[in-house]
Length: 127
Image (cartoon, rainbow, N blue to C red; front, side, top):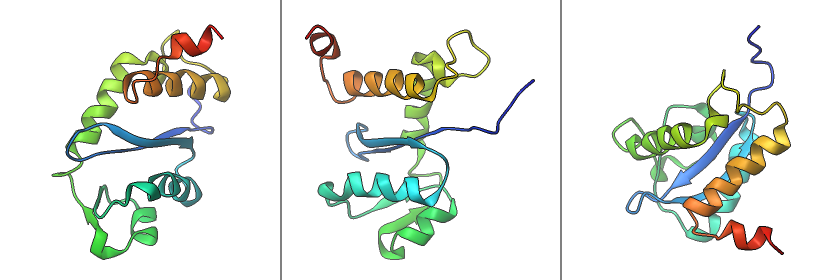
């Protein structure tokens, strides 16, 4: 039986020039989670946001700094595909899919920290 009652989303923002992840959060597809991601992005002083047509973006971003469309979201969609290819927990119906939200978030977070931020997670784990 396929249950979708407890959906989790990986919210992340990428730099348009370098295609690297700037910040990420896990949660439902709700405004409060987007606001949390926006708080993480505040220190970067982002002047332009490129998004899909989901309502939270329109509600929480000024129209002067927000552009909706697929033309500028291709990089993040490619990043999503890379994540799904490399992190089997992002693919339903695999043996690797975790039912524990905590383990799910930890594994994905470790991957992003290692690959996107260049943090040596192995050295940190040996402490």
